[in-house]
View 1 (cartoon, rainbow, N blue to C red):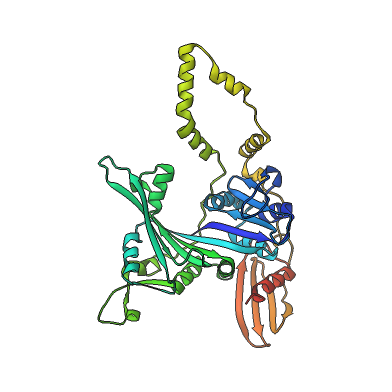
View 2 (tube, one colour):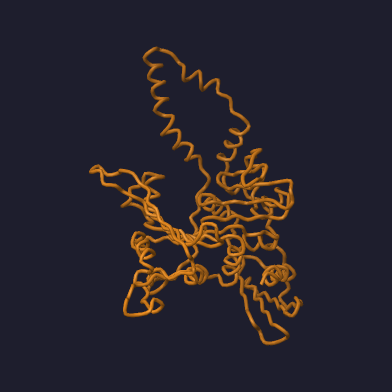
Length: 400
């Protein structure tokens, strides 16, 4: 499982604090643009890592990482010796508000047959709390024998709701984007859980509490859908779970793990555009220079001026990840914690926080002085100050 989309709003207008304390990146390496998205007035960008800002406190600072942005951010997390879990802990303690979270499950064997799943939706063999689904195919003639190769996508749930699923053929997407032959694609299909607002927050909370991506992802999936095989002799609620779907959700397969795929920020997309759109014309111009014994192309390049934007991109491309990260450790990581139980009262909940020498934080909550109701163990690379853990707990429990 991968994080494939992260969007977080912070209730502050201090963009430097968000970038350097939470993302733990140096703002000086970001490219500043005086326009924004989602009604924000400006933004900062480091490759595909976007930080949108506004002078209006109710908008605050918005961090957006799409798929490629998540992969690039993972390269910085690696340099920081931080995990996604530690990042999200910093986010929540800083008061960050989850706006969107996409969890992507890669199907490398082709177990998810999207046309078959689409047909099952049409035949009412998808038992779901969702009331809508839609599918589409997009493609082009790619084979020499002119067979039509189409990419299939299935959406389950309304795209306007706070949770919906997108299942699509990743191999075809990689063919379209990167010219990777469909038969050579590492990932055949992808199942994306797309969460917004409160749903995104509770998914992050679940990941932090249980440290079990399998539990988090399939708890969501099983809550909303299951694919079955039609049996006219039985009520629909008793139809047998489809065998391929059963395998996908966990029967007789290895446990799902949270994985990362760090990809450093590169200039490759621009080079691809240069190769496809500009290079042929440039080659013609160079040939004409040879024929006419001129140096038009050389003169054009000699007189080209780099703007501040171009110079900033050069700066971004000429440094290593280690140079871009800050030495600051965010809200949670370098403050020592007592190894003795601490107590705090949050309404009728008693909270006891304990930390051991192995940096495992154990949080126990008991209601009305009774027995322990819930135990959360969070493994971190550094010890935490108990008051910060209690603050984190208040964030969790006050939203229940």
